[in-house]
Image (tube, rainbow, N blue to C red; front, top):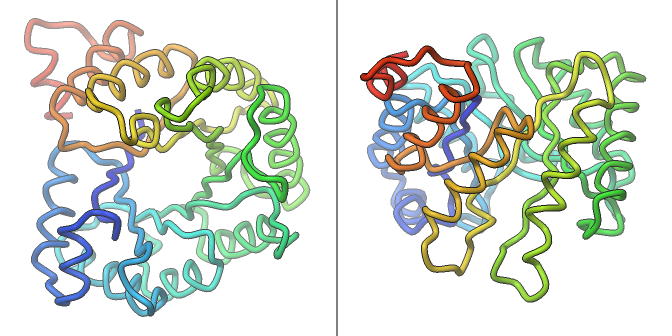
Length: 272
């Protein structure tokens, strides 16, 4: 399971304050701790924590790279912010550009721009593409799959390796009225998207979006993560600091025969 640590995000109060104070230690501690707990990538999202998003994402990337070599996932729908992050990213460590829709009302070529930036950065830099277009986030299965098919087609046309493509079918908060049907729609969409090409694109999601505003957030997240893994989801942006969630990942992989069973399989997974 490719786990993308979610915690270096300006929406979190500690990160927002660290950005305001230019306190590298908070950021570096989060980078180190997430790496130790199993993050394959570290998501870096300025959000609304700073007016200068370009300068701030560079500061965050440079602070992280001082203490660890974990690949960084640059997270913004603004190509100029992604471009700024790439200028200081050590692409030899790998990386990811998160997240581009198929198109936007004010930018019909945003996916093309992300593909071009990833290709210029090198073969170790991947893309997360959202099943979202200029009409917004689809609410049904068929539209999600249709947008994903267009994304895959565009990647092929641009000679972008499909194994560097991560498709995010966009999970919505379950607490929103009439949204409880969406987790099932996501799973049905994943069942179809994984057959769009051979090799198949990776599948990912921002897991914590599912439980926004809900009680029992960790329980909701980890239950759906196990369900999604069984349907072929092989990546997720998650809170790797959530021990119970990480235990679910390890157990699901063991039950899917991706990890060997032993009485100490949880310890073995953490050490791997």
